[in-house]
Image 1: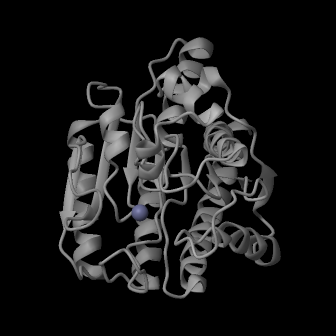
Image 2: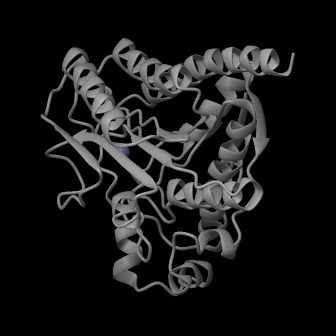
Amino acid sequence: MQAFYADHFVLPLPSGHRFPMQKYRLLRDRLLAELPQVQLLEAPRASDGELALAHAPAYVEAIQNGTLEPAHQREIGFPWSPAMAERSRRSVGATVAACRAAWRDGVAANLAGGTHHASADRGGGFCVFNDLAVAARLMQAEAFRTQRRALKVLIVDLDVHQGNGTASIFARDDSVFTLSLHGEKNFPFRKVPGDLDVDLPDGCTDDAYLHALELALEAVEQRFAPDFVLYLAGADPHEGDRLGRLKLSDDGLEARDRRVLDWAWQRGLPLAFAMGGGYGHDLSSTVRVQFNTYRVAADYHARWQARLAARVA
Ligand SMILES: [Zn+2]
């Protein structure tokens, strides 16, 4: 299974900054050591043209040159630097590459990404560009160019925070369905309605969460027939998260991942996933949850290879 990383493009943060940047490197080290079926590849950088599929050119330029208004830069939560601009492009490139790999192989991943708070002309909540939106639009463009096919994309956003940026970008776009399950009382406090939003109460546990997910997938089934799935597997619904406010266990999150991967697999839908948030009191719990997502995904990738081989035979 291919997975794309960009953590070696270091985003410099002031000491004591609350974003746990090390988690990406820790996850990559653990995958390298314990899951050899995951092939780790350097993320390409997203071009201006690719970013323009979901972002205003003036915003892309302001990020590139460091000329964003200070208030807007503060909303992102990272100080500007040339490295921040580069890292942000690479993170989008990683999701694009993962989507192309999933289109061929069934399942693939970005070791970072899932920057769902970024809208067309504004960042926020540690998100600069919206990798999911750019990748969805690029996959649509490529399917149309090569197969004259109007690709429908489902975005399953299970980060604990609502995918407000993604919802705003696709607000008037019927070809992309945005599903978000998130903490009702959590950031962003003004949510942007997506195609299907499920508000969860503080303290929500495994059973209630998995039941809500089941109902949501049934509802999607009634309303939308996707050709491709983008999955945002946030680790922040975990009980050990500093920001999440929900109480999912390791097993609950693994069951969540398995349900989404299985749902796509049963329908023959290629799936690419990105990591999204994860702010464990103990960072090792975040890395463990994300590593588990890879174990589940590698399992479905192996099933896909058997399926693809049988098609060729
Ligand atoms: Zn989050």
